[in-house]
Image 1 (cartoon, helix red, strand yellow):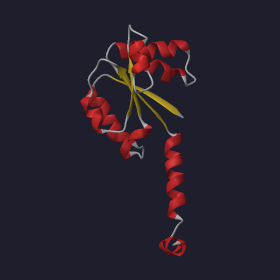
Image 2: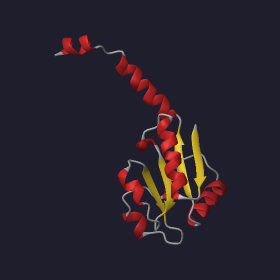
Image 3: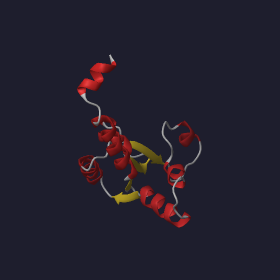
Length: 127
């Protein structure tokens, strides 16, 4: 299931990211949408995916961005136009939108299960 959560401060965003990590999400599983012109230095030290939104300008800045723009990111999900517009409006006001998908937790759990079935003896026999 997809989750979209709005936050009004960087501190709240960082706190929620820590909570999600505590629940088993990896940083790269988390997507944060915010204004392209807002500086969020703490994200430089994470693997969280940041999608910038340029409220009144589309074009060259979005094209040159090294990440997918917020509007294009939101359009990948089954959201109505009104909901997308609401999120983009909140982002343009300076809020942040966190997206995560609990299917990633299931995927990580399956990966752990797959590797936990391998014993040290199995690894040594393969050499």
